[in-house]
Length: 474
Ligand SMILES: *Cc1c(COP(=O)(O)O)cnc(C)c1O
Image (cartoon, rainbow, N blue to C red; front, side, top):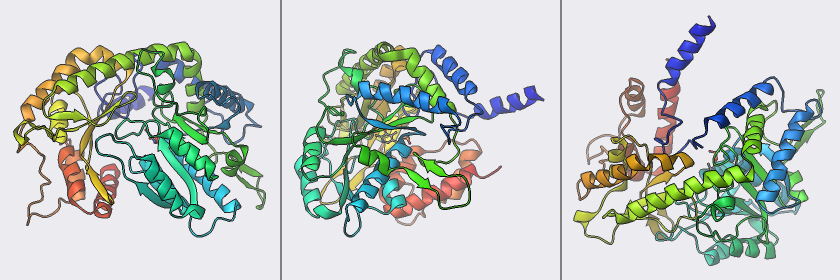
């Protein structure tokens, strides 16, 4: 029976993209150290039956969390910060916004609260605004550098100061891997009494060691910067923990407390939740704790050194490819590649056609659609690569794949079609899902082109229909 169940599980898993080995350059963060996976699994098993809801009944939860927060304090230079281990980056960002909204309300904020943030800030903040009833004021990024102008952020704050609940910057931004002007923005926020969240979901456990690992110096972005009031840093990204763990840290006790939910006004047990869920697994907390203990600062520096070398090689290679350019100056292991508009059209390489061609050579890159910005030039379509320690061992395959793929698709005519001529109808998302379920390859470049071509609310609805159909019981 057990064998049968496990065999079916293995069969299901055979449909998945590889999580190890450096073939998928997003979503997964492979340390290349199998012993970390083992200690994580053993730790998760130890806590398997525990309910993270109540650390007074299960004090191990508080002890594990305390160790990780202490680790975060040292790493992010906030000796007194407090916080939680959440289920992931999205939950950390949601709670940072919730805390800021509650603080704003507590200070008799008028009207509807807003978040001021660059267009490159993570989608999680759009989700937070949607869930918690805030407006977003999006500040454009420069299409050359991928960075917002701090003066524009300040102007956006000033435009209606009393409604601003939170300012967000990224370290680095997910789409382009560049560092926002944290120092300037945090100082301006502090001067005006507004909290400033630094979203280091992806950079939080790699930028702290970047310079020590042989990378270029990274301008200060953590709690050492005046005015930074909260930071999110995902353990399940460059912390190399299994999915389900992120650190959320607050510099001010008032903000930290504002994200709690407590209720005594019902006939059941007294409720107090520091995070969004009620009953919750402690398995990913234990796994993240074990991985962090095992690696320690030294281990993270070693792994980061591999990542630094891999990133450098990829950047050097892309710089040599005619028709492509890297957007801005990545500070860490994330790279966005766009078409080089400075060369003649015959020499340009469409980044999505390139990603498809790299895909045919066995590496999965992540396409990002072009993004129209209000009152500013559009962010060009790009292809995203997240480099990890294991990438270094794959460079002999990866670098030639990047070069040969560009040679294959260089020049006009290689851009993916939207599949949508003047009269041809928009593809039916349910039919697309059916085809993908039947094992056909989903043409991601065409999907991205469609997203660019349609009004965004429309394409977002299509995505929901597609996913619902794809995941429906079969
Ligand atoms: C990954 C990421 C998030 C969201 O995190 P999840 O763990 O996917 O929920 C938020 N911000 C940034 C910058 C990220 O890279």
